[in-house]
Structure formats: structure tokens, C-alpha cells
Image (cartoon, rainbow, N blue to C red; front, side):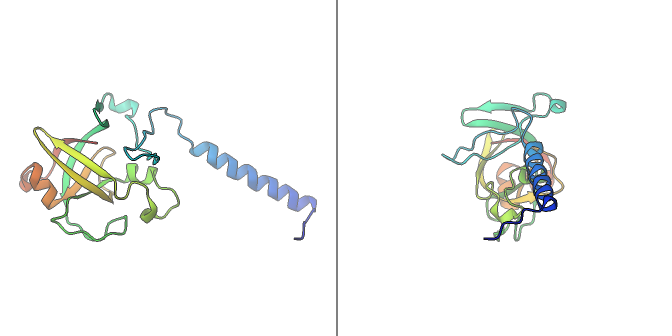
Length: 166
């Protein structure tokens, strides 16, 4: 191994290390409610907490933190996790804000949220779905499901309804 000890090389190496460490420090969560632990053992998954502007948009459930938002439905295909699904599958997409915040390496197929079970509750109706996609048009706490999943919670003609999910 050849070591280069020129002052220019050392200065650039120090600058690069400072840049990397600043990036890590700046990307660290500053909101203590920004992450929660997954229901999976030994697999923490970052999920956003309530933002100050949304007030008390979330509430605790017996299994963890619940999020309140709009529920919509969409036609599926290959989702951000790289899996093909059809309209009868009980799968969902979370907002790009939630999905992207959990991304680990820039490849959406490696996102730890992929495959995570989610329970959606609307009044006295509930359904379990699997997270397989990212929704670009959704608000932070909105969730998008297949036609089949939406029909378990309401009529397709409703299009957009309020729901809680965890």
C-alpha cells in the first residue's frame, strides 16, 4: 500500500471527512418523536411523528402509534418495493414523505418499510395490508390501497375517506 503524504492530499482528505460527518450530523433526527420502533423485533423502522403544525393528529393504540389521514385507492402494478401486485391484493402505498424518510441506500427496493404489515381502521371496519409502494400524491399521513382493500372499508365511489392506520 502506498501512502501519499502531500499536504494537498491531506487537506482534501480532511475536507472530505468533514463533509461526510456534517452530512451524517445534519441528517440525524432533531425531533425526539420522529422515529418509533417497528413491531418487528430488532428492526427499528423510522416513521414520522406528529408535526407541530398538525396538532394531535396521532394517538396511541395497544400496538403502537396510529396515524390519521386520508385513504384513497389506486390501480397497482410494480410498486416502489419492486413487487408486482394486482387490484385484489391487500397492499398499500404510504406517502413519499414516510417512505423516503426510511430509505437506507437510495434504492427503494431496499427500504425497510417494504413488506411491513399495516392495519387500517375506518369506524368499525378494519383490514390488514402489506406496504409495497410509495404514493407521490399523498399527504404525509395519507395511505393509498388497492381497489380490493378499499372495498373492504368503503365504496369505491367515495374515492377519499378519513382513516386511522398503524
